[in-house]
Length: 180
Image (cartoon, rainbow, N blue to C red; front, side):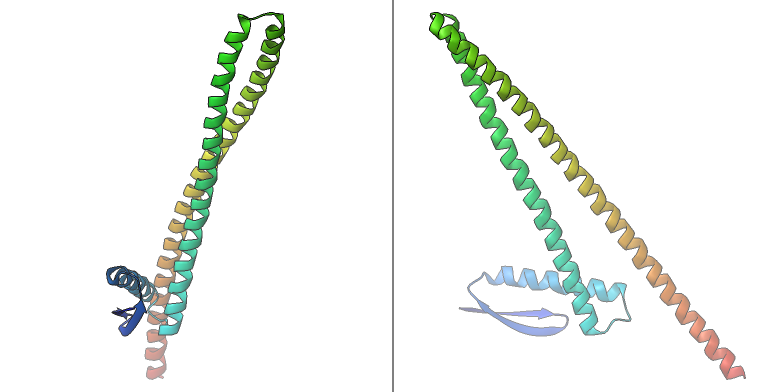
């Protein structure tokens, strides 16, 4: 077991494990940056509140990335299915060409293969439409993430401005009360 010293939020910790020390230090550095970012954006928070908000932000980011990764995996599976069906369609086309050269029994098989081919094309069309819908969903989700991040930034700025205004008003009240 390796013992790695890290500093998070100006506190030293020793992490014991088999992981690469550089990896552990990188994780600690990222966590420290998130905590400082939260503290920088919300200077009135105590340490516990800042740690909780940083943890919440990290979990939110992780969950969003997991959701996107899951959707990407599902799209990848759909693409593989489409590829397999396209390969199957190519096989069926070759069988159709051979059946044209055979006897009447083979002509019946040709008819059947053509019907299967049409079914595969419809299924392929349906899968293509589904894949297009999923791509559109991904783009919509990316746009939604971008909008939410912009909204979050605007709200953070507004909170900051409101806090400054509260401080200014508190000072004015204090001045007025001292004058009385």
